[in-house]
Length: 174
Image 1 (spheres, rainbow, N blue to C red):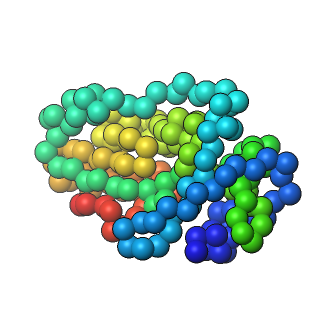
Image 2 (cartoon, rainbow, N blue to C red):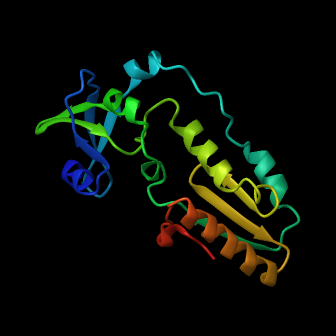
């Protein structure tokens, strides 16, 4: 079960929170279970972050003149971001073995996408729209030639390392 794995990885911790969202286990195609937490009540009382996600047509326009491409995927994207200390208790959920809260940002929070996109935009502030496009945990590195592309990849991977982020090699295409 994912609870034990997430505890071991420090993604969640045991909690004494007065908050508690309902957890719904959903079967994945491989037969394992995925935790889906119903954050609708919490999301209804959350001030919405209006930070914009990039439009796909704008992303595609940015790629039109490039010749070399690499796609990168941030490993378990949202989990790479730490929760703000004062918000952790609000993410609490009950499971048969107790009450837990998130140390890392979970899916389902209404501001998760905006928070993640803002973080990625900050990580690649100097490179964005020059040779990097980011849509949440998907990163496209694009260049006019192989020599530039090698340099661009080194910069991008360096920025990710500096931000403490990692890539899922199985989902990266060079």
